[in-house]
Length: 196
Image 1 (tube, rainbow, N blue to C red):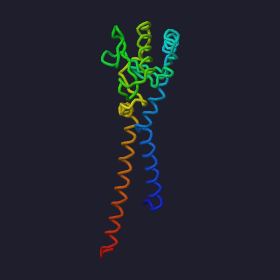
Image 2 (image 1 turned 90 degrees about the vertical axis):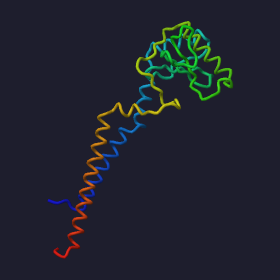
Image 3 (image 1 turned 90 degrees about the horizontal axis):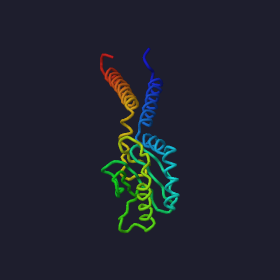
Image 4 (image 1 turned 60 degrees about the vertical axis):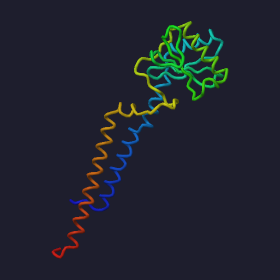
């Protein structure tokens, strides 16, 4: 039974809905939201380290989030958060033994940084030197959604099944549209021919 015009419209709309759903599920924005949700989970050990750092430094230090490869610390009144990494090449300022790098998460000329921000950086570095037990999550360093350097691209490609689903949906839609257009051209051509 050939599809009527109404059924063709229903099929095309269904395929467009599937395509839109597949693209939304695999979009970089959804992937970034997933990364942000994972990033907020810091271990109890990191929270305990932050509590000890607060007591030792007389600053209010808390774990802001813990994506792979970094711990982001919030220091009340500093004006920014601080990223702590154990990667050897990372960090605006390193601890004396070089085990940790600490970077303010701010787009600012450090010479013009407020004194509270500079004191907070000094306090975080001193706390790391006094207690180097901060457990930085393992894995390749990932820049989170709050950092202007974040592209979000890797998250999308870590979902190959969803990307494959989107590709299949696009190909199916293209096939249906091609057949509909071709069928209309054939009908138009046969309607205009003198043999019809």
